[in-house]
Length: 381
Image 1 (cartoon, one colour):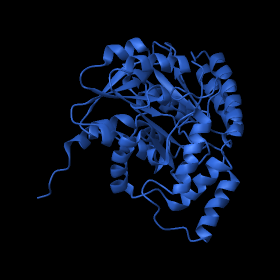
Image 2 (cartoon, helix red, strand yellow):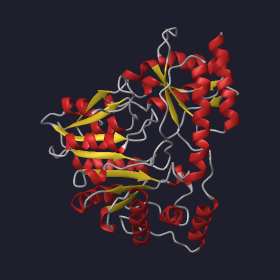
Image 3 (cartoon, rainbow, N blue to C red):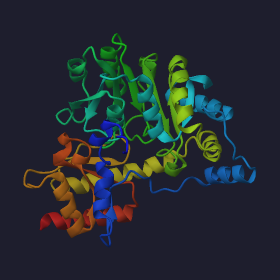
Image 4 (tube, rainbow, N blue to C red):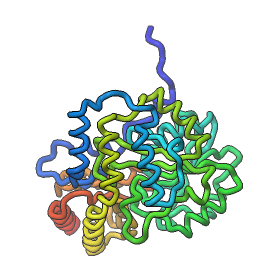
């Protein structure tokens, strides 16, 4: 008789984003505004660095935490970009930001711990919390312009609270947090000892103000997650970074080591090129994304949608008007089938998101314009 698998898995479903994407796959002439994938190619000089690594037979294991020269470059890069002071033994190169999130949670969580999440939120955190036998505690931010407030945070902290996850700029909302807003949250957290997992993967894609990290405000409590997927259009290269005080990093390294050994050596060579000679590669992409964001907001508002402007990333999280009676999933399916436009239903992110949809403008301007034209025609019907 086959032994049973761990029971926590029975309550975990495939991501709603992927579920919907699969649901509309096969519809001809579809314009997808679903996945958060930059439509820009990886910069040529980064690709050439990887090709050179292959030609040089740089195909063996690296140290578990990453190549020493990459760790040194990362230390310099994050200091110059965001005033983050981390030594090379306080940084781990991970297999994308996703592995970084998993490693961080496996390191700090114990059964029964509570983890606070601003809601709506990227659906990749909650299953990892559950698998570690901890409890996700969601805070509704739909009435506070998608921003977690100090009052909300204070109300939800209990003796069991182990961590707060704050992704900013946010997926799915595109909303970020200012230095003052982060400072107010830090003031609530400072005396609690609660860990802060700051997911800053979109830190290079901000439109209003330069990105500010919460880490300098709560150095001993903060685990920073970043990576090159969004900033350098390197999604498939799978390079992320974990940054934390040494006493935390040395424990996270154990999880990382036994999970993946190390990140791809070839991808690490590409990453070294990206954060040295290409440290400002995101500028052109950021400029284009801002143009698309302004265009998309104007079109959506003309259609009658209520829109909270994004501060960064490449998403709008749009509220359905009361005249639309379907839930977000059914409405999005109808839009896909009739208008050939795919957006992600808001219930893929949370129950609070059921009256919303996420639109990604990480596609070409021409495709974006055509998709919005189709959406307008669909709504007029």
